[in-house]
Length: 420
Image (tube, rainbow, N blue to C red; front, top):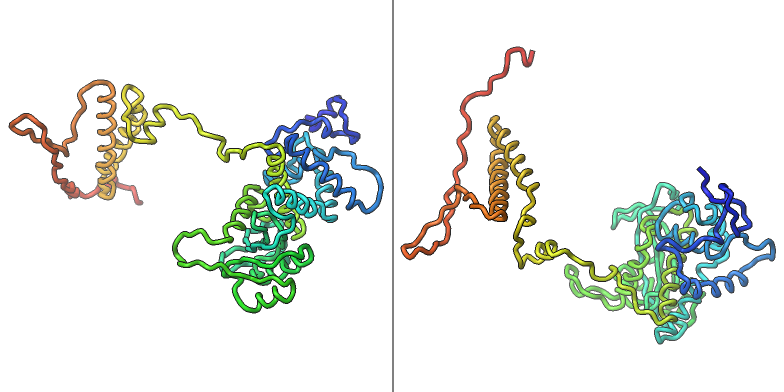
């Protein structure tokens, strides 16, 4: 069975044999729409022209197909070899990913898209404040022990992601270390990257993991940034912490991409690149919405229609009537359960008598409901009695006291030769 249609005699527009990336149409949820590609394409081509080391043979495959292939891997968390056939060959897609990550394409795209987003949100292009936090994720068996470690607090063997975001949640700097590295050690590397990229930062908010005078003195000496720790007022209660929720929301955005749910990358540079590409996708979709004036997409796809039966069962305000009130399968299963439990209890196992009584009550309740739905007289439980007053009105029912059945006294006899 041919993998690519060109093997079956179909002529494609791509110059590479066995590839039809220039003829594909966006069909996956991870693919960029036309509006999103109109936002990303000019920035991507501009950055790639600036980062080109030497002029040589132009790229054969379509740039949009390459970006969609990387987005498919990041969003769905599949292996590179598992790319669908309408994308370029996985070797070419992975080569594109490695080559341009080494040149800094995704990091530069994040920078340019972040500046545009901040301007659309009414802020200056360069931030003056940031929020830092870390996240520990488990490592796959492809991750070497040299780049992973054990975090004693969260009991995780893997890697740590140290992020710095602005007040809108957009990524400013990123460091991936072993999980054994402390938050303060990761913050020191973040401070160096922040100082190299920004000259306007003055304050950094963090949680209590970054508390202490040594880190505060280091941040002031290296990057002239004041570290402010936002602590909890009470340790065992839910509360919205000032500024800290912004970076937690950013982690929530990133965890929607399955490739980031666990660290599968062999190097920390590749792990950082995956986070940068996920951020590029998030920023591109948001910027396309701003530039086209589109409303925010509903997270769960709008209100789902419910059948009348499901609505009545969910609210509990209306009782069902008719043949659909109680399925007959419930009555049949309850009767079978009652028979099995009664058989086991009859064999002399006292631990199952309560289950037998429960199953019998369930079967009786199902039979009563089925009889009521069919308009028949419902049988009454022997454990319930009702008294009638002289005026003919029914008084509240009283339950008869339940007594435990007597334990069988006859010993169990086994056939001769059973244990010989």
